[in-house]
Length: 303
Image (cartoon, rainbow, N blue to C red; front, side, top):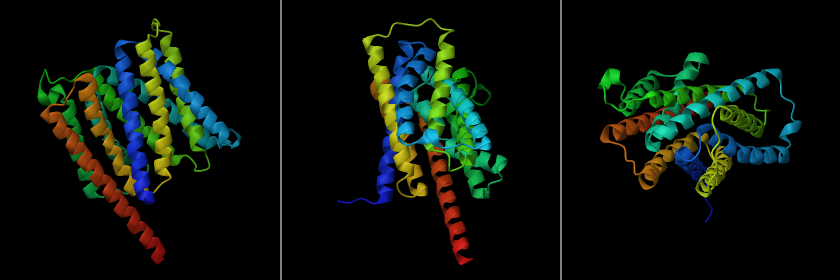
């Protein structure tokens, strides 16, 4: 039976989020096996080999890139490096479901940053949703200033917030890069940057022998992160973005299941409540953006 483009896009997005989250679980499993930077470097080698081959097949290396786009790609790569460091560091020390839940605030932070730095129109309903969503993030993090000592807050909680900030800047850069620049070129630049982080950082840490278990986790991380890239590109090319984008929240369901099955972690009630608030406000924000885009298209047609 034939399926619609929207359904296909939703399936691709779900597959992408599941693949990226399984990759996160594989990387977290390496935390007791390999040093942080060694794990990043070894995974990056496989990712770059794949993306480089795909970019070569697509002829991306032959596409000239304007100076402005080069600067934006460079900035995007720098914040991608920072995001990888903060995110994987937090992932090594915090429950995977908690880290994934906080990342679900990205639609809120991107919307707010777009309004502040790019002058994009954001109505009061979305602003209220963003504030409520940030309150949900606070329920997950529980900073001592609000919840007292012993709340479980640590420096790695701050790392997750810094990762969200870096990814927000990354996504804003992507919005400003010309559509003429191939997606594979942008992704490959980021992957090379992250590999450089692993290479330089590994010089500061003693290397550990890669056991058979570590090799399996590395192979799984490489396989699933590549699958995540493939599915995410396919998702953006299938169906309407406004319909497909909300399915990114399936990553939280996958993270909850993996946290329980692999690491024996299950969030407490406050974390679950905060996660529900973040997801609900994020979905509302995406819904409002979709309605606004439809009104704008209708206005253009009337002209």
